Amino acid sequence: MNLLPTELERLTVFLAAEFARRNLREGIPLSHPEAVAYLTDEVMLAARRGADYPDVRDGAGRLLRADQVEPGVAEMVRVVMVDAPFAEGTKLVAVFDPIPGTEGALVPGEVFVGAEPVELFGGVERVRVSVLNTGDRDVQVRSQTHFFEVNPALDFDRRAAWGRTLDVPAGGGVRFEPGIPVEVALVPVAGDRVVFGFAGLVDGPLDAPGALEDAERRAAEQGFLGVRGGPGAPVGAGRQGDA
Image (tube, rainbow, N blue to C red):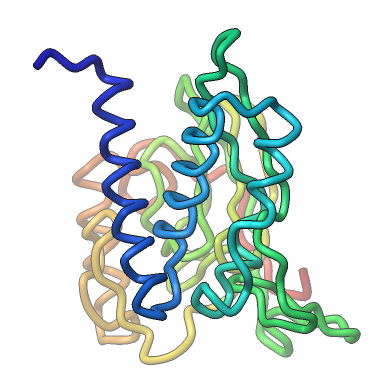
């Protein structure tokens, strides 16, 4: 039996749909993959049986109820899109909100935004440094990065950046384009102030005696710009104050 990739995919959908049907017979609520497989298989079966497009699309919206799927699944399955085999050829069937949800149900991943603004890093001391990318391509620095250890081609006062990260929300970052100075605000690393990884210049407590000097020595040996004793000179000294 020689099967094309699309036929193998069809068998996979069928097996998952049969698994879902077994769960439905046993009264077991369907998971997200099971519900999608069941709906997909029923759409393809109806089209293969000879039903017309509107009947296939509308019928798919009456196959499952919210109480037949696990909590949150109805809200997760917002659209099911199937390339269905109609007699006149393959057509894309788009079924929107195929499982009627429960009023007020919790939506997985839903974000509730508070009415009051949230202050980031409230009351901490900020330092601003001017950064110049001397390389030939963009460099992006993320929120969690110990700024002292960023790309060696970024030229700035690294001593001023010791023990600090970007003053941006978690997951954010700043992009530095070649040859364009960018001024950024930095905030202190909080918690135990222990740093591992990044460029490997610290790998320990930031506030340990001699930690800064040891890191500067290693950075200079590795050609980092903006460190004492290293190549080049920082383009701008850090200054303290509110960002």
